[in-house]
Length: 306
Image (cartoon, rainbow, N blue to C red):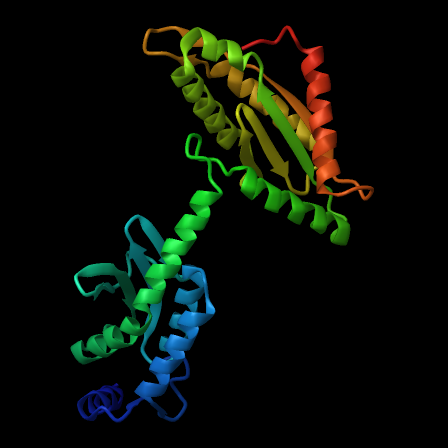
């Protein structure tokens, strides 16, 4: 360890190189790390990735071969991206990065054992090469997610649904894994808007969305398709499993009425349409079959009003 520290100190003092033993291959001979070459590698990585998680992992791979770093976590506004294995309980330090007077973000660095002050300064210099790229990829990812999320319910929207149903259909065509699509809308939703107003209608949509989150599995995908229409994609699930999901939703609605500030209670019901993947057709015909099933069931359940 003494030799390791002296090599690091020498490199920082004369600025010509960075000699130390890699913590990953501690038994190998000490290798020379050229600071300029490493900085160029980091800048090349910054141009290669468009999402912060991939970029942060690539930066970690480069720098963990040089210092005993065990994890990174990039924090920017309300966004947090971490490398696998990062735990806030372990020993770490927060490095803040600025561009002029603007805060780009904070990097939480997890290390075992702790670094010297010179090593921390060297690490901060290296991260400065990619700090702006981390900020930009985080902004891009947040914007991309916002474009695929419904602001009222917090569910993914039609744009996200179109991409996921195409992927599920392709998975079925290649591997034969059957999946199900459930489409639904709220019975009598227009009457609720006309009776209590659109603000109550909005609350009801958010209430219904929260119920969907509760009853689906972690592997399922829930979307607000538009208006009072919702969709659920159930990977690896046949028709029987889809029917069980609709039964769980009905049971949740039975026990969770929407209570208004006036004390009035609004009871909502929904109609469902189910369809499984089939080799004849594509994702559009898959959705059309589920949509047709929805309206057949809706006509048959006219008495089930919100």
